[in-house]
Image 1 (tube, rainbow, N blue to C red):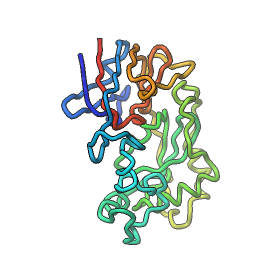
Image 2 (image 1 turned 180 degrees about the vertical axis):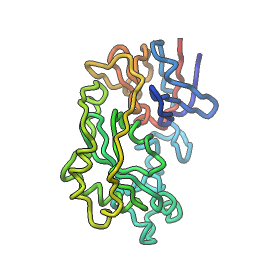
Image 3 (image 1 turned 120 degrees about the vertical axis):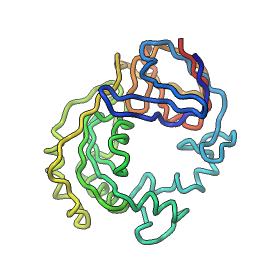
Image 4 (image 1 turned 30 degrees about the horizontal axis):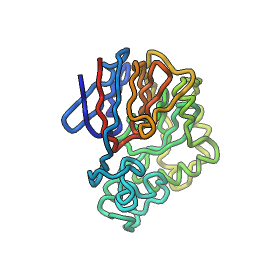
Length: 264
């Protein structure tokens, strides 16, 4: 079977295990069904996710020009504390920014390779945790806008990590943590503006990834250097495909790449 289209991050559905889907313009693929099968990936060309032109991808699936122009790639995306829509101040597109920033946001703890703090829109729970490869996570604060979530994350970063070691996450080199204890320990560091939104009575969420075999030594597939790859799929975790020969492929990191995928 052959599938072709531009890569975007895999859609997910929480379950036991999590279900993963590749969605192309004219094709739809349940990636879980490819486990233990030989899969080939062939890089064909680039296609910017915004302008849809065949231009080299710069970051986040966008070409250079789009990345520096569109609101979907503005600095506040990665640094929510820079959000200004609550002040009615525009960065690149105020209508878009209000739509995203002025909605409920969650500050959370997730354990992927270690306990880390993060921010996401409430509608993206638990999708955000799945995308990070977290096997357990818990909400700390639910606030009405992105700015409050951002300043809370900044305050907590002095006391807990804000990055995931993706290599340890993929090797499953992890240990369980009591996230309720972590949440309670960090409560005193929540900024005054967000203290009333602290979530005091909840339990952690546990996530199960479809992995038959974890890699021992990681080899990251770079489609620019290796435009054709073939291997037996052994697992899916975060936004990575894990192959039998220890090759791992970051689907989200290759957004905007047009590929053909063959199974058999």
